[in-house]
Length: 461
Image (cartoon, rainbow, N blue to C red):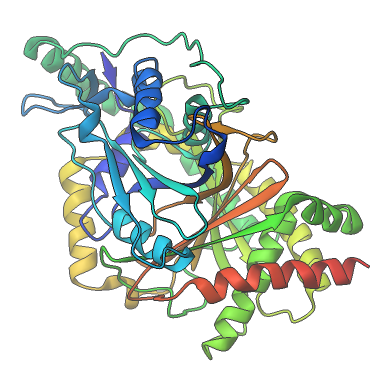
């Protein structure tokens, strides 16, 4: 029986029509590299070959009334690719603005939980003659690292690369009602003992963690972020923009200042946000606070579940006008935040998430939204910034060369902006997704990113 982990299931429980919790990847493709030329039928046929080899694309949720635990994954015996692959045309004139608006509309729609939790939209009619693909997968089934890995399974190093040989077990069939009830009841019975096992570690951690934060020796404390127009109640409407930077230029800044690529990425985001908020007349005097998801794939001792992530809070020095000062601020702040974050066991979030409850979480999110509580209490964090490692070599998606690979992460009540960065083939691809009522137009922020990089290159000499 392949049961969802508590962390995976939490993304189902916390989802509402306004807070949709899937992740998207926007790929722009050069169809001229497809052997024999691009056609939708050819792309779909090659996709079908690969989907047949990857169980993650053919599993669906099974959660009957007698299930006392988290849902389980089962094989979809009626799997039909036509339910997941859609061919659409971008409105004229087919430039990046129309493409982003179309992607924003798709990103705001919930996935059908009766089907495997993914969709792929093939978008034609772009003004530059390219093709775009928007892949949408629920966060319950992938995190940033595993999502990027799935995309590489659909791609190859050459246009005519054969489908990869992936040795993965087939998804299980639906368990019998008695087996599901017995296994779920066993989990319920074991929960008190699990709480007793986990509680001492939490009670020991909390004062030590808060002590570091209060002494300024760690990450910023939640609920201390300055309020901006990005921080309010969201709806299901989305806005999208994207940008592409040169990885060698990012590395030049990294080498000149002796910092990490992640430090430079956060400095770029901080510089762009400073210009963006200043233009809106709402630049705060204090640094913004970003939640930065962190993969624990290399630290976890748990082999169960799709999401193996933790997170830390990072100060973004939008209050500093000097780009070099922002880099040095982030290098020191990130060092402290990472040390502070490593005080927390890599599996703590996953272990405590096992106690998440569908009804309680669902009612809480709906009440939080209806009462607009995000606008009434201090701001937890301003936005989410994620840096996902990508393959360094050029990739061909079902035969078409990938020219852009823009990840689009979810937004939440109280934090209506997500900035996700992924590097591939010498480029840094930045995907921006926002709650439309809070940030209608993200293109000024996307345009500020190359300017922020230019400022850093100038400061680096």
